[in-house]
Image (cartoon, rainbow, N blue to C red; front, side, top):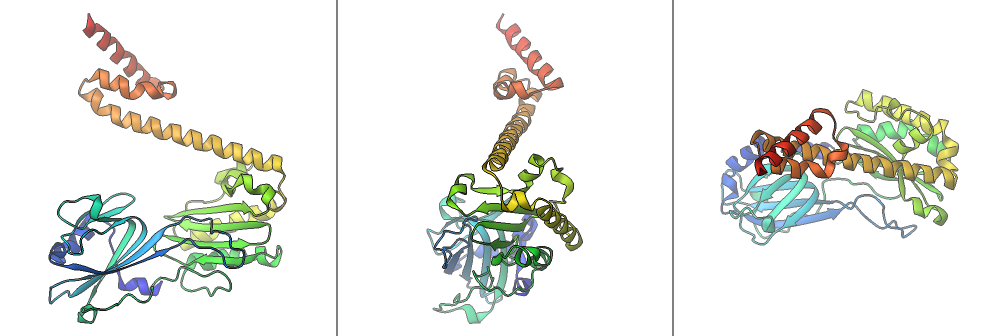
Amino acid sequence: MEILNEYTLIKTQVDLEYLLDKTEGFHDSVIKEVVMLNNGYVIPESHYMYEGEFLFNARILVQTQREDIPAVELLAENVSLLAVTNATLEISGTVESDDIILFLDSSQSLCNAIKAQCIRYKFLDNDFLGKGPFLFNWPLKIGEYGDIEVENSGFIKLVINNFAFLTDEYGMKCSHIQNGTWIYSSVKYSSNAIELKISHERCSIDLTIKYIEPEYAQYGRLNFYDYLPVLKENAECCGWQAASEERIDKSLCQIADLIRKYSDFVFNPSHEFLSRIKEYAAKQAEKYATNTLVSQALSQSEKAWENKNFAKFIKILEPVEQHLTGSVLKKLEYARKKLEHGKH
């Protein structure tokens, strides 16, 4: 959105250090106002709870005693922690792979901190000093249920262009748009029987399906990606990972073609078919969890191996031994022999 161009995005630790250097760590500054907005909601027409992620966005106004930077506004998206126990500040922080953490005092405790997926800031002038209030409007259009006016999100327009057949041929309604917020955009199409949600987050395209009728409630929200292997279709035939507008457009076109091709399975599925999808998804989730555990164990075991701490090496790898192969199994066997030899 154009309004976000006024803000500076914190991408790296260097970006954060620049902000803290310019403001002297917000020394002797005060949090004047905090406004939070939840992306979740209850749909007016149906009184159903919105089934997406209930994520908070926050606006924070900080007033300083500096003449060159009288005030700073922080915009935080997907806030997982916001704990303010003291209005006066001494900020430090860290930029991690998935989150940014701002510690609000010198204790660097999460009891007084902000943790979010994305943070932007804007320097403000003297107009933002005084009693206020100042943050009476929300600068980000999250989208409204009902008639929607498409604004400055390329992804939104590409979805509407590629999935126009959902309204033209299947009578569905474009019921919700989350319009180009900083990392995440989505479009939801709804009818009395089904919801389709197409989203784009961190270069990843996702399409989920939910069946509204009570008899299908047990299946919850399904991912169309899991439909394809059950249909003997290569799940990677679509570019689910896409960043450029050209690539996103091509991927959306491919996904839309698959929805048309398998429309009977999407719009009129049998319980047997949906059960197969749930079973496949559960197996994939279990496989992913196992791979994650193995990867973590291998990473943690490296230092123990380098330090010849064979007892720790064995303790780390034994829980995932059945999933190990090749040289790692040989190392585990060697570690056991060394440990046994040391006992004699």
